[in-house]
Structure formats: C-alpha cells, structure tokens
Image (cartoon, rainbow, N blue to C red; front, side, top):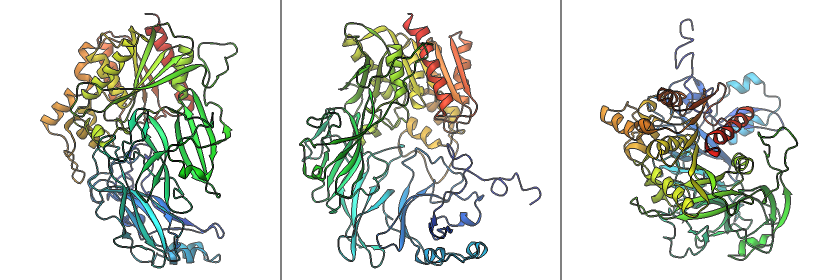
Length: 623
C-alpha cells in the first residue's frame, strides 16, 4: 500500500527482540516427509497473526511441540509474550524463562490427512484452512507450564504426560520448576481429569525436603532448575524420568522416581568406571533401545566425554554405575595469543586444576551458600597468583563446572587463577536464594562476590594486589560495581556488553521488566501494561547502577560491545567508556558491528579473548 510500507504493523513488523530481530511470526508447522507438503497449525492461540504476521498484536511464542501418543494432537508450549496476547509492545523472548506460558493441545488429524495427499496443488493447500477444531489449554491455572513429554502407552488407552510448571510463577528470568505428571487418554487425545500429580514440588531452600539425603558439591537437592525435559525422558517402563538439572555449582544427571518423587544424582564417572566423578558436570541425553542411557560428562579442565550406562542405572540408588566411554571429544579451543611458534598441546585434566567450594556470608536475609569454582594453573602450589574474578551474567543463571575454553585459555596461557562466583540470585541453590536478589542488585550480589574473592585471598592462593574482574551483561554490571565500590581491591576490568545505567536502559532494552525487577523487586512490573518509569523509580534505578559509583572507578577497563545488541543496548557501554575517559582512566573500546548480546561470532569472540588476555597481561600481571 502506497505510503504504508514504512508503517509499523502494516509494512514493518514488530519483532521479538534479541536474536529475533528479523522474526515477526513464531508458529507451528507440520511436514509430511513423504509428500513434502507443509502446513501451518492454525488452531493455536494467537492465530490471528498467521493472517497478518506484521500485526502489532501481542501474540504468542509457540514451541516445544510433540505429537501425542495417539497421533491425533500436537501438544506444545505457548508463551504469552506479555499480557494475554494483548499488550502495547512485544518483549524479548530468548533467555526469558519467566514469561507466562501454558501447555496447549491442538487436534491435527484433518491437517495431517490433507498433507498426506501428494496430488494436492500448492494453491489448494494454501487456500485450505484448518478445520480440526479449537485448541485446548491443558494448564489453565499455572502461570508457568512448559516442556510436555509423553511416555510409551501404559495400557491400550493410556499414556503418561509430564511437564514442568510453577503455578505462582516468578518475575526473575529463571527459577525453580515443579514436575507434574498426568494420565493421557489416547482414545480421545485429552488429559484425564483428576490425574495430575506434582511428583517433585518447588524447593525454597536446599535440603528442605525431609527424605532428600543426597548431596552434590556440598548442596542437598535445591529443586529442579532446568528449562526443558529431554526428549524421551521417560524410562521404558514408565516408572522413572531422567533429566539434567543445575545442582549448586554442578550440572548433574538425575533420576526421578514417579512412585515417591525421590530425586537422586546418577553416580557415574566416564574416566573411572569404578569411582564417583565428584565435581564433574554430567548430562543425561537419552534412553537407548535396551533401556540404558547415553550421557555426557565434562569438567572445568576437560572437554565433553560421551558415554553409555546400562539399564541398571535406574536401580543403582547411590551406588556407582558401571559406564562405558563412547567418545572423547577434542577441545574447541587450545590456542595462545602469546606465541608465534609451535603451540603447546592442550592436555585435558593436566594443564590446570580446579576446586569447588561454598562460602556462607553473614550479610543478606536468606542464608544459603554462595558457590565458587576456582581454576588454578599447574605447578603454582606455592605462588600467590594474579586472579581474575568472573561473576556470571543473567543474573539468574549459574556457572557450572563444565568446560569453557575461554577461561581455560586465560588460566593456562595467562597463568591466572580464575574465580567463578555463583552469588545469591543464581540458579541451582533454591528458589528463596534466587529471589533474594530481586530488588537488591548492585548490593547483595556485589557483597557476595567480594566475600568470595576475600576467601581465596585468605587461602593464600591469590595476590591481593593483583585482582581483576571480567564479566558480560549482568557480569559486566557487577564488574562496574566492583571497580566503583571496591577500587582498592579490583585493579583491572574487562566487560562485555555491560549494563551500566539501568535508568537509561529501561526504555531502550527489549526486557524492561528486568530493570524493574532487579532494582525495585518482584511484583512491581505489570506485564499487561507497559509504562515508562516514574521519576522516583528512575532515581532508584540510577542509584543501583555502576554509573552511580563512577567517581571512584580508577581501574583500567576494557569494554567490548556488540552493536546489534537488543538486550543491553551498546549505548550502555559507550556511556561508561566516555565517563572513564573523561576521568583519564585507561580504557579501551572494542566495537563489533555485526554482533548482538552474546558476542558469539567466532572471529569476534576470539578477538575479544585475545584482547582480554593482553589487557590483563598489561595492567594486572605487570603490577
């Protein structure tokens, strides 16, 4: 239409934010692999967008689809993108596991029948609309429900369906989920009413469930912290579910008994089949045809191993399960920027070692451990090392003991101690710990990181005069706070897409709710009514931002920005960079024009870590 090609909602589409900057429509489709025909599943919530993908209606994000055992329905998750599909703007979808979502079922028998006819013309297929009947919401009373999975049929007319849910929900971007199981009527393609059971409930504090005795890295079961269940998570007999969850600072494969709700870590070690793996991070991948399992294992200093467990692992309880190594994968990165000659070969498990420990700070209302993962280069037992502290992003995520080549690069080739801190607010330590950070960002998390840093100094491992900090997103937010609030302790900083001034970020980001929740607390942001912040709210947001402490910052600072970042706009890092330069603080700015929030393009990511090592070499090691 002339004059409308640049109008939002007509010629231009409203997108779903970070990583989905060119995406207006997220829908479900069925493909017949024999005829090659494709058809949209139109009897879904928010179906009006199928007819007008450039509409500014709120709509839904649809995903995680599975066919029901009867083959008559598709069961899937529908994320309400902000306010019942009726909202003034769309909010960012990726990494946001708190968006209200429900599980729906859409009958598709007639759609599948049409797609199976080879001679159907493309024109006829496009004009034919779905007449399978309306979709049904399976979880109307849950604010959060996602990841539907089915067992094999248990009888001729029944199967089990499992899914993750949190009836109350949470405002933070991650949180604890319950596991609910119900019976599915395969003859009618519906949930059998009254069969819903919460097999694993929410956990506020680790160890609060009376029958949970298992510990991982000094932490009793903290609740289920996972974003989705594995495909085929049911055991062949339908009595167990296997999955992967964050458990303290460790990622762990678990077995859940549907009979009593017990949750146990699977005890195996792909490097030594007769002994436990202690602090290795492990993942359940899938069941095999014989009832065994394919699993993965990695450590801070060792890339991923793939292995096999026999079917007896389901009954092993706490005993060590005999395992078989299937594949030993090579590291993604083992190069050095400091040498132009032959590069030393990376030796898994040898080049650097690590230690997992917890501290229990006195500050804060919720008394739970703060998890720490410390990396130390080989042959450094009697040396006080320069140390780089790494608070993770999110903030509601967790840094586990999995293999991350970037930090291995700094530890091995830079010979830095690396300290990862899972401050309160991290996933894997109970819901109460996670929610305690909401409204306390810039204070509780900062104090936790300082306490963890001081604990390593007290161990005699780190040189107190050579402490740096490196972080991205919320980790960059904490890096700015640490060099501003504790300039005498943190001498050098490197930041990736840092949030530095929440007051100027709140109206520019694709997740304004994050700005409200982390500074003002849970329950403040109204997901159905977007509004700009008030004068008083802006004042609080500014006070809880790193920019409020800029006058005390003196640490040489490296800042890397993805200029396509929709999550933390690059103006945040630019604002901080110019403020540091105005103070004559040594600063360096890396600009990646074609990168978004993650800075995950191979060339740019490599460039960032090379620059990061050089920055710490120049300003920390030489002190």
